[in-house]
Image (cartoon, rainbow, N blue to C red; front, side, top):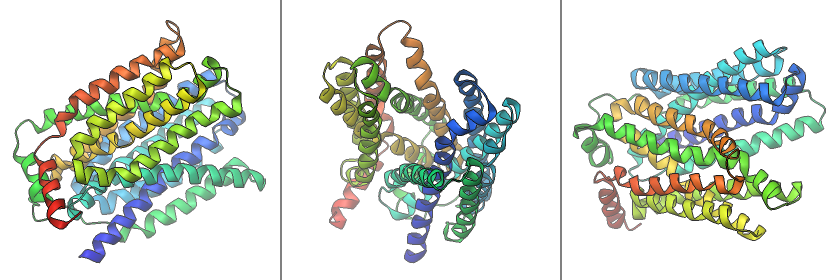
Length: 402
């Protein structure tokens, strides 16, 4: 059992890298696709909404399918479909075909995202200690891998369609090859694992589980809105507000992303020691301090420090929310994760637009104060994670000597 559990954990890492790589492969080819189809930035922005709509729909469908048929079936199916549809935006010839391609690719990517997160919850349950943040860190690794592959393909003279088709084909093979290591479906009466009795079972019998999941989804919406805003506005902040050269400004997002990845690599150990509630509360508070420094600091070093703190603080928040949603009811982990991830994804898509709208009223850096308020609200609401599992986890870790 221990060997199969380790294999399931490795396979989960693989699927997270795969999901990040396939989405990253689309992102790095956006300029080429935009030029091929002959559309404006504004039109592309509207079409990207369809990508988000498809992902949201795919999350809801896949969550229920994962609960019914198990991750061993749904996760590899999602990986294959996501890999197979990656090339579709590359071969689109007009806005209408690109719209359909993005809707379908988003649906498949969202399905893979939720099903692999639901499986990650089951792996974490069986391990008896936090491992969710490490999975999310490898998603970021997939994005880096996609950028390297895209750069290499461009240097080799490959056109975007060939590059996307090759990446998708390799993704399909990896998705199928890793399927056997996944854990089988967990029956509704499951409760025999070391964490299923101490973490999951109290949440199953506790009244108001659905309301708790909704609150987790609202927190995910706020946290991922902050993350989405950083993705699109960090570099522009340094360039437009502080007057940094384009090359220097690009390091703002790099600083944020590097801090977030580093934080997720460390978060599991911190969760095991201090509990998920503390990580969410102090992480959100750290993020609030960081983005406030960005908003009010007039110096370049303050901006870089602020974006680093913002990424470091946010790094452990989303994994804890996903994990709490999955553990709320092991038999409905997929559906619960899909609710939290779906609303969170809406926030990530809305973040850049919300900040952009606010810039019509106030300066860009002052618009970031909204993110401060969202982070503070998240810190205040972190107590929703407290179900007794934090205390149980800490006592188990103390007994085991960790």
